[in-house]
Image (cartoon, rainbow, N blue to C red):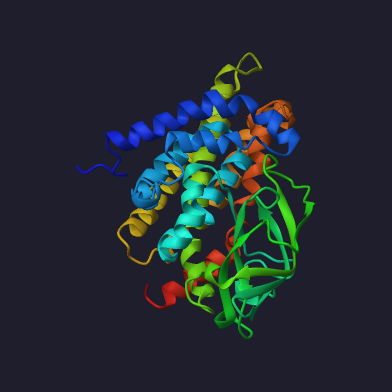
Length: 383
């Protein structure tokens, strides 16, 4: 019987290395970094030293040239930092803002932007969402007008993870007419005159990393920073979304698995009415249902990962994985908090943070409602 997922010794080594680092160097600071609203830049240097900031990126620029199964092992290990804000910041840098550079960027762009990310000396952000549009990417209004050898960028972005400290932004801009056909991607250095960071938004969860409002006023960016073809950005963004959404599915799976194991352990120890609360049928059956659902979520996420690795169109399966895993995580973690009783309502316990953090997953990277539309359209087409 073939093993699925197809983890070999190297996958396990990567996962175990990341888990040790996460448990020993990151998890002890989870409360402090949440309260501070940030974490040290040194974390990116440490991850670079571990060689994990370029898992799927070209070896020519310092990457490992591996596939998505290694990224899955990385996420499984990193999840033991028990801080989804930290995880989100790292995954934006490695798996949301930069894969498109590795895929379609020129050699010069990869040397200037991608290689420093792999080395941990530059941090990336992804700039798509605006005050007037989120899932409706075709409606973005930030403009980039051609002026000789530069684009002049004007507009605003919001909810931008890493926005206050990123060295560059993979930025969606409008270079053409209305609709999806007029969008392009620019590699935007944040030291560009006219760029300012606005409010750091006060969020429900993922508090260890910022989400910012960004402003662009007559910012001049060299034409050489155009990523791919002018007005081809919508297609690139949709392609890039597959990795972002798969990352969200993996985050959901790992978050609910850790929360579920914590809750089962707690229920075995916590006494009520003279016996452990986990011995009551209501909790035995609740946990049994969630354990079965967790395995179903893993299986779907594995299928979506394999579809991406095999270079078949992953859109339908990735959308299903993000939808199913993100929505399931809400229910699982709700019950995991409930079994903790009053302690679950106290920030001292990890379940309180997990409950707050997991609520982002059905929203970010395309809402659950958008995932349903995508799945329905693909099913109608026989995909």
